[in-house]
Length: 110
Image 1 (tube, rainbow, N blue to C red):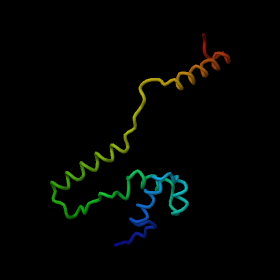
Image 2 (cartoon, one colour):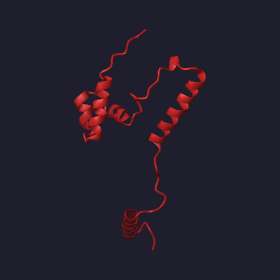
Image 3 (spheres, one colour):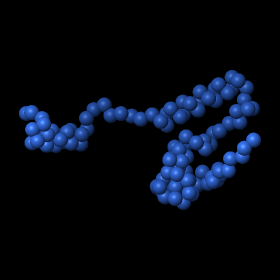
Image 4 (cartoon, rainbow, N blue to C red):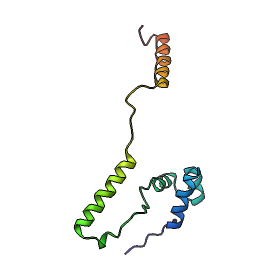
């Protein structure tokens, strides 16, 4: 069996999450711990190194199913992105400026 060497430990992962919550940027954390920004992002968003991990080999099939469903729901909630359905004031102004510029260039008719 091949052993995978890791740069991080649970103590470091908890420290990264604490520092990120206190305002340290992912870029600064990445440099400090010598791991990629993407890796830091996955850590602070708990997509990897999840605290509520479970020894899967010790679960009965029904409990394993419940565990997977629960963690899938948590992951889906973290990945969910709200899409604004109405145009904001900033969006409207930005569109008006763009339309005015297009009219000036003759791309958009009055």
